[in-house]
Length: 639
Ligand code: COA
Ligand code: AMP
Image (cartoon, rainbow, N blue to C red; front, top):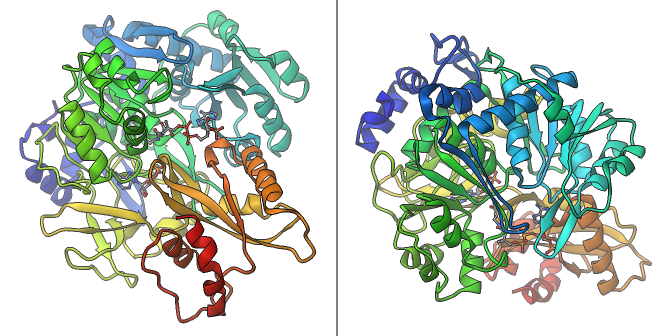
């Protein structure tokens, strides 16, 4: 435990991080091994852009792997692969994982990948996904992982933005009801992208129709087999990079159709995740963490891959679902089998388990005595779900609030330092380095209890985004210009008189469907491509299971003769093939007109309020109030 964590009071620790951030973070940095220990904590010379540990040098994988082996813990388990869909299971000690990662890094080197190069990873939840990410970081190459539920067009958009020379993929992923062929999607993405990818490396999994040779024929790239490439390659040592060197780009939905390439550095990420693993999640060497997410999301990057390994703990990589693979006892089976002490999932998964097993009878089938905490993030943990699962498991259920942009919790209950009283509906208190304010639209702080825009005073702590990939201007415009001196989270909420944070929802057009972050703007752009659609609005409707679900309201072009049912089928298929099944777009309603302000802005918020059965406000700037009246029956139909 580093000196920073030795205080047993959350308030002292937090206060120090805000009043003496330099000391706090240099102290936290001392918990890692550096090639050059940083003399300075933060460089503010280009404010509002900040860089952490500007003169430090290290490699994050040295700290996640080599450091533990050198300390004599090479035989400890680093990674447990548990696949409920193939019933395959594999364990890697730190020595074995280091060997795999070093050889994968050596293989990438033979393809010409070097420090600063981007590598796109499109893989299911298999060990090679983790190995690929770490192999990139070992060379100082910048990985960009794309979630398997995204379609070819989304992969192509990321290829064009990040410009990788290399793509690492697999023959396919396995969903409970079907197999997802990856290679046709990769080949199509390569064809669609303007940027030319040089090499594609394929992990061969049995049971998929399209071979690498068939896919290769459709592209100009050279295709390789992962197994032979990594077997032939010699190991590669960790390359020492500047702490400010980019570790990865992870694309996330914004308000526009163009995803944002969140970029994080090696040093800040290593320091923050190492600190958070113990202090927030109470996970350290010898303990086992199951983060039931996907490596394609930020939760997977941070708490399946980097943080548990930085902490010298054991991480479970679970390929499966919370229910249906085979049943609602999947998590509890793993708790028993792997001796899991901390389990991290999303509220939607807990609601799915509750629906399938309302009496939580599956819990009693397993010995879950190793479990100390259940952590939940990705969307607001509703009090009823929190109560239900807490009673079923008899462990504290800890909500924590964060975003792809921050990389680790902004607010949480730091059980590794001090377990604070839980308040239902609250993500508890701000974490170290996050100086939070709730602001009105003019940027004035609001008093306790009043809802407004949640903002974070700059600089953000280490491990958060330092920019958007190749686009500082968009970073400043999207996050730093609404409230001077603050990062705007895009979330709305309030702080109570004890400082507890209640996050209530987004202030923008981002929606959260089953813990997946989606842009209604992006879905609208896909819907608008249909030849019969004149204009459309996609809004997120409240959903008991998924949190939100997208629904499209469309105005047809005059003369269009298509039936609503036919249009729905075509649009659902189109959104699936252009964004991916993860968009979960299934509801469509044809309406005579959309409500707009006089300047032409669609009143999505008013539509959402009506559809969710809430009190609704109609702005005085509405162009034609009659449009709302006409829409009421259609919007209420969705209740
Ligand atoms: N590859 C391909 N398709 C995928 C996919 C992947 N990796 N992940 C999901 N999909 C597909 C699903 O098969 C589904 O397709 P369908 O419309 O044909 O049924 C669609 O995308 C929507 O998926 P999802 O909303 O996830 O529904 P689901 O029924 O598969 O699973 C849950 C429901 C609750 C189990 C699941 O959403 C879940 O575990 N969510 C938690 C998310 C999470 O961990 N987020 C990270 C924050 S912690
Ligand atoms: P993502 O970038 O996919 O992690 O999504 C981030 C968004 O999810 C946040 O901006 C919030 O709107 C929402 N979110 C995540 N965790 C929580 C939480 N614990 N409580 C409320 N909202 C959350």
